[in-house]
Amino acid sequence: MLRIRICYESGDPERTIEFDPAAAPFSHDGEPGSILDVLLGHGIHLEHACGGKCACTTCHVILKDGEEHLSEQQEEEADELDNAPGLTMHSRLGCQAVVTGDLTIVIPKYTINQA
Ligand code: FES
Image (cartoon, rainbow, N blue to C red; front, side, top):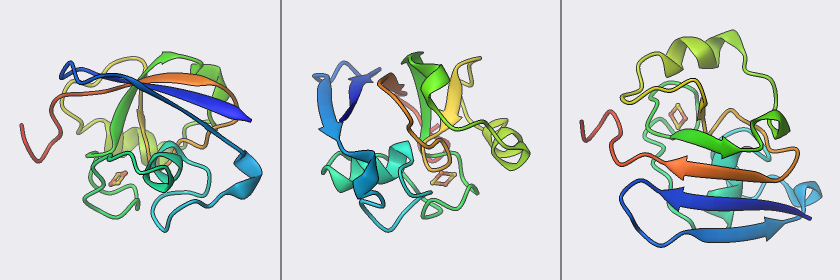
């Protein structure tokens, strides 16, 4: 079982989910086993305006811990991520980053739709 701890920049209470990566995909959006896929499949909201197609940045998350437990960032993701408000050195697109180990993520307060 893998574990994702989810913190919110907005101050909303944090949550932790545990899941079996072999059960992916959990939902219809994002790469199978991606942060977006896992969160949606566990009833946790993450914006995904483009439907998990690496074309909007609204699924932007910031890694607080466990960044090495994600699939390698591809050029397409890096290019798209450049448009995310509040971009950090530890940012990823939730729909592209596939989870391979335990993580702690922060969901930013603002997405490109709200900024
Ligand atoms: S959902 Fe649009 S880039 Fe991830």
